[in-house]
Amino acid sequence: MDSAVLNQLFRQLFRHPACQCPRSSSILPARRPGTVRLATPPRQQYRTFISRMRKKMKYDENETLYWTRREDYPLDFKETMSYPLVTAKDLRRNRERPRRIRMLTREFIDDSLYNPHYGYFTKHATIFSPGEPFQFNQISDGPSFHQLLEDRYTEFEDRLDLQEPDIARQLWHTPTELFRPYYGETLARYLVSNYKLTLYPYHDLIIYEMGAGNGTLMINMLDFIRDTDYEVYQRTKFRIIEISPALADLQFQNLKESLHAAGHLDHVEIINRSIFDWDTYVHSPCFFLAMEVFDNFSHDAIRYNYQTEMPQQGGVVISESGEFNEYYNTQLDPLSARFLRVRQAAAQREFPSPLGSKLTRPLHRGISKYRDIPHTLPEYIPTRLMQFFDILNTYFPGHRLLTSDFSTLPNAIPGLNGPVVQTRYKRRTVPVSTPFVQQGFFDIFFPTDFDVVEDLYRAITGKLTQTMSHEDFMRRWAYIEDTETRNGENPLLSWYKNASVMMTV
Image (cartoon, rainbow, N blue to C red; front, side, top):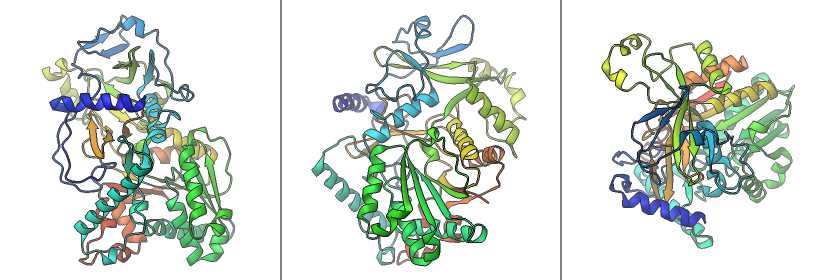
């Protein structure tokens, strides 16, 4: 069923000239554009399986709902208001994609990515494993490493296709896999140093990792701790919190097959549940790892009226035929309203706004441009991330957070802090320009504004933080000679220029 839907979707995509995706000279999937620096010319992408929307707005009688309506789709607004407003949690048991419902933007994204039956991470997602670690000191330069990586990608996917062909396989890499074991050793070196300075010998070294992928980071860190400080290793407990049953099984399988499984098994616990369902109080001090996790936390879409500066919250109506229509409501739900209040109260500096700087906003009221276009482009606010900080504060009061993610992303959809929305078809990346796409077939990932996030985290948890670039963190804690090529280039430092690291201090 999904295969037929996908084939139809992409036939429509590539039949429309404006929607054709430029073919990259590389087969590497652009899971995180900009991390692998490929020279692909930018081109505007349009939505694939529904036609483009014209900027024609409709509103209901009480002027609380504003609709972005397509000319060729005669939607009955009053009828759609009778559709139930549902959440991603309400749809967890649904085996089919829903019809005749309304959803807030964050709930739609959450359902698209994490639904147990048709979600992106459940259905097609695969994390690349390069096999044997790269011997960087034997590679001549950066381009040679890039070519070697492409070759291993091809070999890896060829093996998967022999077992089970999948034209819609979603394949990406992580720094943990590319720089194994050095990336994991770097994080372990940071954790052990801070543990011995502040907690040893009165407390055990307890590490939680959320979204552990293949489990490679866990294995590399435990190997390093065992080999460099056996006394600390004996007191180490590593707990993975994994929402995906398939990945939880894979993590345990990889752990058993690792060379030192017999020793590590007693130190590891894999907890198959969503962090947002967590209800167990952890009184002990612990370290909490969230590496490349924030980007897939769902966001709410908020736009503002240029004249009144009042916010409106975005949502989507899914019709009986499965068509998507976006709408905005002047009545914010409690979570989005709270985020705006906390951000305003916690801000240590002026944060970006679709309205522009505070100095220029009064000018909008007198400019005809802003009378013709009454609303800003949407701002995507990390409401789910705020809920994650609430959980850390409530259930992990003694935690220290270590997180890394992308502070900027190229080719994002229009709007402040807009996500990249893309899929992979026949080993080629296909970006689109809207988050309202067929659930489960598209990755939706956001940049992280660490200035805003740092203020938010401090306000909710009361803890102090430090943020630095990925390169600075690696220079401080990695043995960078391990990942240096023969001509002196270092992919560990140069491939993640758009990433930052935040830690509790």
